[in-house]
Image 1 (cartoon, rainbow, N blue to C red):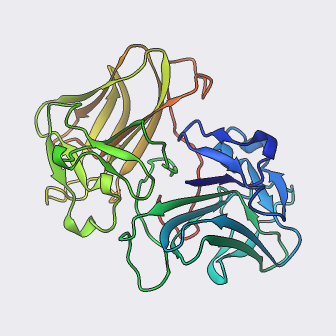
Image 2 (image 1 turned 45 degrees about the vertical axis):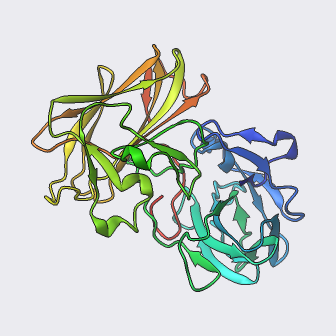
Length: 364
């Protein structure tokens, strides 16, 4: 896969992103123009590392990246732009992005303090892919990161060579959206997935998801309403619900004295046809983590916590608090470096972690 940190000095390249395990490299070998910038220092502890630097283009009408790809292959292209007042001028840029000679999208960062992420599925016709930033006003175009992932040829068939993603639900964070391109090999559970359909590779992010059935002995499998089959990412099509028992727990093997980023998502999707949005609590071991109320959240919730394990077992428990059954769609667990988000207690709930706002308003 291609993961470029735009504006990253070559001497700092490559590095592994501690949240998702991706290896990012400098963009300097893919473009000969533009200058490196760095977001305001106040954002250093807020943004993920790949958004701390950027490349801006004060000269030239059109500046292009040239990337090696395979002919006749579909790619998911994700381009992000975070201004971060890198120049101290508080002038939000606006510009266009092209794929080769064809305009893809207009970017306007006004009113988007956390930046934009845009995606397109593009079928390459040659072994070279040009991503071009075109100046449209007085401000300099900027770019923070480029990520390119090959897709199966039967993914999102269209009549033309490219398909812009204007609406794709993957996750909704109860506080803020995050990007979930995680490295293979960590724990990624598709809750309620039949064992015979496990494992599978998520075609958008490369994650290998497995059934949760070996990690819990209670609950039943459900499936969201069929109208959502073409809207939700695959791991949210099934879920596990718990009509019996006050407390139902997953038991996961972890390393003692290790920090983990735990992400739990719940998408109701009217799986039972009752249109009764569940509410329940989630615990980490004996300690309450969060209360979930899916009323008014048709696309579900994603919650995260950084937790330091004290033993080789981690229990994630769903606790019934009303008349509706607790539900869970996916669990993802990622080890972190020990110096990530130091806290006085064993766990740190992420109530605000900036990633990106999409320029179309679709949900990542």
